[in-house]
Length: 252
Image (cartoon, rainbow, N blue to C red):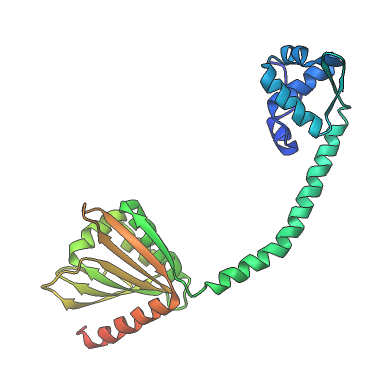
């Protein structure tokens, strides 16, 4: 198979379409020719050919002369393709300089809205798995490697199904947990403590509190799991204070 003279990536970099390049090569072969012959040589219709020729002329890759009845097109020297690459380099350098001025302004704008919490919504068991991964990843990077959780008996098995070996992975990473359980069940497996708020009631959600974040897992009206992670230090700190105060009052 004959190797093409140019790659699509090269044309994309230069801002030239493949049809435009086909028409430019047709001009190189023809020398000087009217629109009809150029279209036939390039195997395109006249409308497409005319539009492409206008773009080639604007880029300095083609020119024309007007005769009495026809306009005759010609290809300019292929060396002008190098000028297109140079023009692109100049444009990229100008864009880089402009970004150097713009990025600090954008970063400053981000800082203005820093008080707004970032909220992430996750759906289904795969989403809950990602939420649990976030809890572990963030917690293991903290000094005390600890997170807190309100554990609900009604959701415990569903959350476990999203990551069956979550507890083993938590222990392997050396992440500790304090759990306040609501409802029957719940055991300790290592690096964890558990106290019961109530063994007769059930809460409709799980709440994780960890390193500047809070995360909630619940079910929608179709009984499908979903999770919401809120990243805000003030909210997480308030939840932690409430949790710790409650923890001290509960029997161990």
